[in-house]
Image (cartoon, rainbow, N blue to C red; front, side):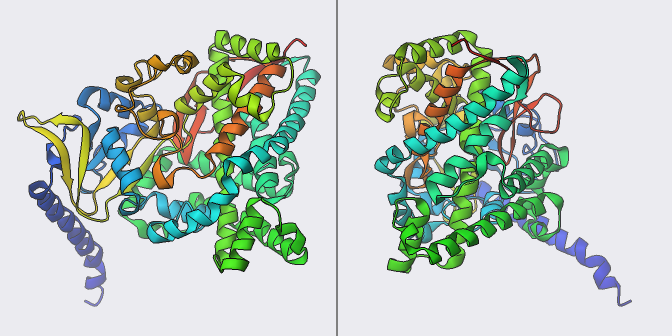
Length: 526
């Protein structure tokens, strides 16, 4: 008898949970405009439409939906979750990211993941915490500070180029490599972010801490590519308490944070023993001075900031560089034109040269950033009832024209940056890698049709939550891209490569459950 309440408790809890969601769905139907938004056919009774975007390469399903139904689509949520709005409308994007960023925080999928991986740093904080924190960090990422990082990035790149050239030479001057293994040596948690931000040398990826972080990230990305890994974020959104279970994927996320925090402890101890070391302009010095002078951060917050910027530099530049090299291998005429521009320039480009005298390099870098936004997908949730403005009016199935959408508090909004950056309705041939579009202004979208982010893209987001290190990321990409294309020729291997979302944008051989990006590399003629 005494066991009956325990027997029926899970059934009762599930019934109450589903009843609540049903009631909320009915309320939303009569008090919002979400039900008027077109919805794709199909979908599962259990998963709704949420698994469909994982059934094809990253961004394709959203792109097809936007092409068929317009820039706002209603997805059926899983487990009785209310409808989800998938958006590409620039009016809504501006409303969420630029005009009202603090009433649209990250969803229950992204924010807990960020806390587990890097802690409660700048990317995690929301609202007033972010409003206060961002100005304290901005001074470490100004245009002047980025210019000052040029020499450090160049040294790191030259070290990687020498090691890479030795490897290719030892293989007879032509070999197949996993290109991420080499771009990571200069860009992951490694030399650039270590030296520029913290005055720390990761030994071109060969230190024990660098290898430990790399292994943990590899494990986490691999798990995210499996069928269970694709379902996990959807399940955690609906049942967030499961995130406390000792699952391998969750443990690997925490391992990254633990490793970087241990490094942070060493950096802080070094600064305490040598006060002169924190008088510089690097990020660590800025953080410690803010803590000493303004009481801006606790020790835990300092460590979380270190985690945020180390891991934040872990995938971004390396991934974009690798994916752009793949695009150059797939478009040898573009690669040849870029190499000619670099070689005809004659001398090593200075900081100013990279931004003013190498127009095709600039075009290739922009096209790489447009085509391959590492943060290819994100989610936001409304904290209040609101009205979303539509840049493109929506015509309902009954013929009514809507210029805005009423939503309720708790509305989940999916923002597939990769599909937005490649939207054919905006870019014409958005899924084609075509750097020439950046050389002629009239080939670029009308500003009213595109986002307000850097160069009309959503790669770095826009507004107050725009990536604080975007200038450094662009500089890294240009230096490394120009150096690699000068020294090497990149070709395809015949492997069919597809892009998937696992933690962020990843490349793999089609059908495989692990990140992989093989390229054939040969030495360029002197």
